[in-house]
Image 1 (cartoon, helix red, strand yellow):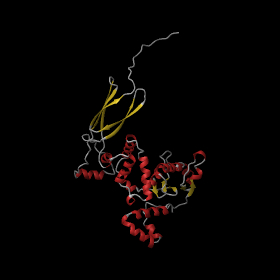
Image 2 (cartoon, helix red, strand yellow):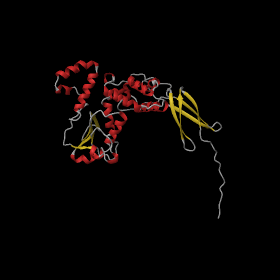
Image 3 (cartoon, one colour):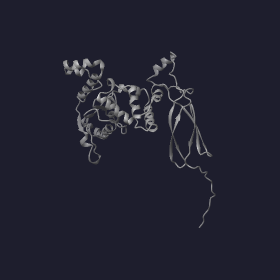
Image 4 (spheres, rainbow, N blue to C red):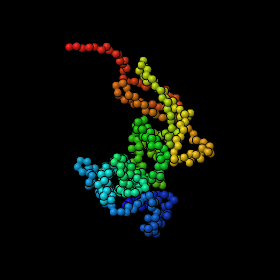
Length: 350
């Protein structure tokens, strides 16, 4: 049984931090046996791989010489005997990926990590406490099988992926915009400093009730950013819709400026929603019941980065502030504009 002890400790820790179950947890520790404890573990926290698996320790076979990294968490690969070489070749980058996540986001939440390659699995990858079960595949070229599996370990334990439901409601581009706003506009470290703080708080038990909510995520972002992010969360997290820009520009030779006009037209140019099989029934019922669509924001405010590639090929980034639905800008053109004159062809004879 892989990961069961750590999964049990994790579940008991979360239940202990919960105010509603504190007394029940203490009573179960004194009165219940091991079987009762196992019943409290969610079926998504542990798994029992059964089969004629061969295991391989990646620490000895992959990390050698100058490429060796200091990995404190051993990685073990399980596969069927005929798939051992394929499994080793597929997971050759696992130790380096684990080392990268440990350096960027803090220590790995488990003492070890294992990957099990199975056949006929209903899904491509299933993640558990300290273990990832991956389906064997016949594709010659595919994305890294271990990257998302390793990344899901700290996001599921100690921070539950259910706690990040407010993020799943939005496109990942929202977090991309937030990180750019924190790093470019406010000159802070961005989300690369926020995530380790959240993981550390979760592992130390300082998160309220062991869960992460939107307000606490915003609080940590503002603490790292040293600036308020109220308008950003109001527009991009709690608000609906997305900006639609109509941009026109012309070059003013006399002033050496780029005159630009940015208009936001999302309030009167609404794009019809495409049909999707996952939400078709709900959309059809909403259409028949004449349910009102969510209110559209007329103006999205905040900084925008404009990159200008000038005549010599040099890129220049300009950060401008959008405050109204129609914004007019004058951007300085750094290169001197020279009109190219056509010269007469000269024949040179020897």
